[in-house]
Each structure stands twice: as C-alpha cells, then as structure tokens.
Length: 306
Image (cartoon, rainbow, N blue to C red; front, side):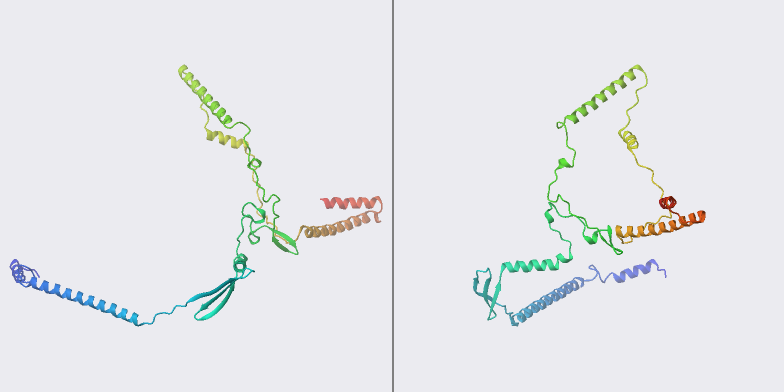
C-alpha cells in the first residue's frame, strides 16, 4: 500500500521521542542498569567456581593416602661361583633372591634366538668369514628350481665362494693406467687444440680466396651414431612360432630322463629290426645271416639316426 509524504512525516514524529539518546531521557539509565546486572552475574559465577574448588580440595584431604611398598636390602653376598645372593624385606616379609649376570645374559640370548631369530631373516655382518654382510637370497626367496627325482623339485642351493674373506684389489678388476699421470690427457688436449687451429686457418684462407669453405667437422653425436652402427653386431630376432609351448618341468633328474629316453630308443630299435628282418625274409625267403644280418642292422642304425 503506497503512503504519502505526510504519512511518513507522522510516523517519524511518533518514533522521534523513543529509543534514541536525543529523544529519550531514560536511555542512559537503562544502559547502566543492564551493565550492573551483568557485573552481578559475573561475580556470582566466580563465587560458585571458588566454592567448587574448595569442596574438591576438602574431599581430597578426607581420602586416604595410598600406601607404598617399601623394599629394603638387608644383606648382599657374592659366592665364589659368581652368583650374587640378596636378602630383602618386602612389606615385612623376608625374601631370598639368587641372581647371576652370566645366567641373565644366557636367558636373554636364548629368548632372543627362540622368539626372533626363528621367524626373521637377520644376518650378522661378516657371517661365514665374509668381509661384508651376506647378500644371497634365502631358500624361500630363490626362484630357480632343480629336479631331485620322483617328480619333486627344490630350490637350487649354491656353494659358498672359495675366496670368502679375501680382499680383492682394484688392480685385479679395473684396468690400471700404464703411463705417467696426466701425460696422455695432456697430449690429447694439445693434439685437439692443434687440429682446431689448422681448421680455423684453412677456413680463413678459403674465405680470403673467395672459394668455398671446407666441409664442417661432423658433430660428436653424429660420429657416435655412425660408430654405433659400425660396431653393432646385433643379429635379427628370430620369429617365434605362435604354436610354441614351453615344456613343463617334469621334476625328474637327468639320469631319470635319460633312462626313459634310452628305454624308448631300445623299444623303437627292436620294432625297426623286426621290420627289416621281415622285409628280408619276404624278399629272399630265408632269415638273414652273416653279411645279410650286418646289412639289416646297418639299415636299422640308419633309420634310427634319421
């Protein structure tokens, strides 16, 4: 609903005498009264906190103090065997305790071996006479298997090296310099510098004569690529048949495999011999003897070789 200007003036005059400092004489009194009420509430809260603290302290004083167990050593003797005997009083009771530093170390070591060493892969430095720590894989970590017979396989176990504990000199593994230190490097640097000087003189002379400059020296990367191609002896990769399937591990040793192979060859040789003898009988009407038998056996050997 739209209002006129006169209506707005009337509303403003109605509110002019209330809620403001200029129009209401009791505004400051109301503000001070609210401030005093806030101070009273703060004081009451502080008194309540102080009462609570005092009550808690009184309860703590009333509670019984905890009794501590007192241990007093009465006597201590060392026997010739190395054992230490201590007589102590604990809560009014006399207790005799026999301990030994050597026994403690043995118990500690046995506990460590049983609980830790049995299920861990901790290795000692220099184990087996080595200079450093052993870096070989453990039996469960090895992936290479060998047949042990009866269709079973086990991880391959390698023998320790014969030179364990011997420090190998660098001269036995790295090529050592054969000339005086720095001589080869200095000669090479001098030769390269002389080559660059001559090439620069040739370019200057060609430029003055008005002719074409000599061909620029090939870059190091290009030379390296050409050398790599010349020195490369990599053979073309052979194509693998898509029907190829690797043989599965039989678990048999070499002796067992050879035994089966020889038995099969013997069986096949007998079949071929019967065939050749029967062929000779069909041709001649009699069994092969003498030279004829030698020819039959030679034919069998030839068929076996193929």
